[in-house]
Length: 227
Image (cartoon, rainbow, N blue to C red; front, side):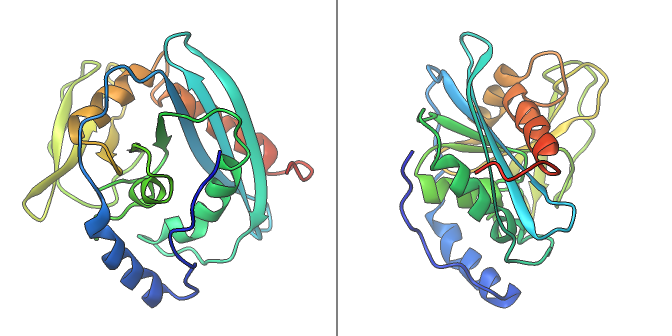
C-alpha cells in the first residue's frame, strides 16, 4: 500500500507539539460507511533494548471474521517517550509496515488515542492524515478527559469529555470488563468509531484486529529481523 509524505519528522518535543497544532485543524470528522469490510489492526512494541520500533498490521475481513494478511517490520526508534507525542515515536514504524501490505484496508484501528488528546491529535488522527483513510483510536486507558462509568453490559457507552466537548466514548466491549477509550481519528466520527469497535470485537475485550496485531508484535520484539 502506498503512502504520501505529510511532513518531515521533528527531533524535539517542542517542534513536535507545534506540528501537532498545525495538523489538528486538518482532521475531518465524518461518518464511515456501514459497508466497511476490510479493516487493519495496528500495534507497536519495542525491542528489548528500546532501540527499535516493532510495528505490526493485521488486515481483517469483518464479514468472514478472520485475518487475511499480516505484516511486521522493525525500524530504528528515533524519538523519546513523551506522553502526548507517541505518534512521533511509533508512526514511522506503522507507516513502514503499512507500505508492505498487499491489501488496502478501508479503515485502520489503532491501539492509541484519536481526538481524545490534549491537542486533538492522537496517533490515530496523525496516521489518518498520512493515509487519508478513516482511522479509529481504541485505547486501553485514558490519556485525558472526564467521564462517568458506563453500564456493565456489552455495548454500554458513556461520553468522554475534554474542555467541554465530547471527544469520544468510554465503551464496554465485554460484559463487566474494563471499558475501552474510543475516539475518532481522521475521516471518522464518534458513532462510527463506536460501532466499528464493537463490530470488530468478538470474544475478547480488544477488537480482534488490534488484539492479533498486539500478539504479532509481542512475538516479534525478541525475534530476528522480520523486514
